[in-house]
Length: 553
Ligand SMILES: [Zn+2]
Image (cartoon, rainbow, N blue to C red; front, side, top):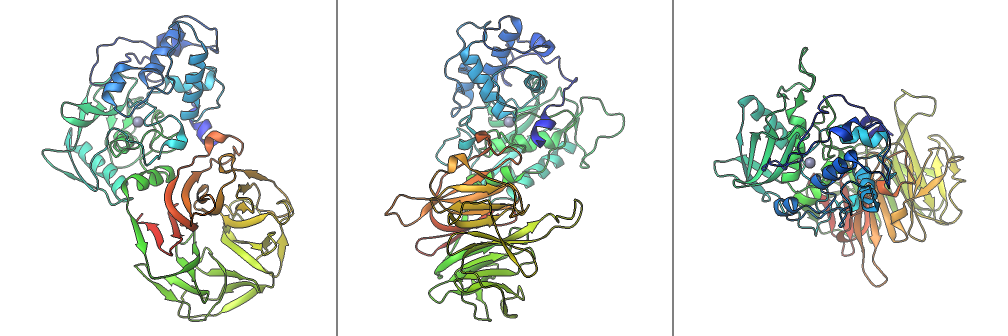
């Protein structure tokens, strides 16, 4: 899988890293010399200097109790609460910590310091510890957690003490975050955030921490920084040259309140040698949106279903009680479909063309413009839900993606459209068990079963493949929306008697359907009823009293 292969690159630079000190207090003299030179696995029962250094590393980066971290990062908690009994012996607490580190670093979770783990331990990384607010990636976005730091919202100020050419890259990095939210960060002399150059030990590129100046990002002045705007290093650059913007955009994520991500994102804790990673991944965008965005609420409608095209982005609803179709006008209202459609479920294809399902069939619109066009009948099936996106052309790689449309019938079976005359029944999903369906942008269906479990299809061919369930989803789901592969949002049902459910984003790392660590869930209270997700992973949902919610981002 992508993350692993990338993270497994062995590296020769910066292996002489020494010093386990935190950025603003460089009195410790730790060395990882033996750990870095290690050529065999370490597991329970191992002992010696390399184990001692492993413990120093784990304690320095948040995995064991550490008084200094507790002081510097109020929300931090040791990932493993009990330190090893003997600092020179690898015991069960060491194994627990190594397992958590492997999860955080995107490695196979073995509990053994194997070669991939040794390679990761040799990488320089962020000085901000793991374990803020919780090591469990499922809690990274917890809205209740007080992360212990984070600049004011929606307006914050910063000051940069560093070379002028780096100031431009800092501005670019700030823009990457603010564009996704309603956060503003502007220069000021008495700022909420100081970004400065300062000496850190060479195992650390940068760190976000409290100093006497308040919240501070320190960029290691011992690192040979690249501060150009073009993402490539000039010929003849030193081997350990490091992209300033890549590191500062990560540290800004901390300043805005994000912890480390276990996904391949800007917020992963480790930076690879000569890596450019300046652009936010969907993971980062969703995280910051939840912390720093505000939702828009549209009122005055009585939606029955909602659809956002996850390729093209237009938004349609079915509005009761006449089951009419309406297209979002880009502001606070919707425009009624002039063709007088009447249906129960809606989806939007890659070209902005809506599809609808009704007890008397499935229909596609002849125009994306609600004031023109008609509805064209393309199936006589009794339809209860419908989904549209794109999929790779089955004739081979490299061809443009083609439209993909799937539906759920009134008797809870799944069908796929062949883009011509026929609908093929999905012979893999259990009969009469499907309730809701969404497609990701690889054309793979995500299905909520009649008993509320979310399943993910591993193939676009209705005659083959298998479904994997989301282990953490049991058995509460009422609806699902999926954005760019493979970011989704679900609606989690409340117990009987409640009007709607919580909105729960999840992320799926392709290729590892059975690894629970790669599902991530957050409860985002919204009393939602149905949900759909746009091309940026941005959710739209409506609640039990008909309010339509969406993020600004
Ligand atoms: Zn970090």
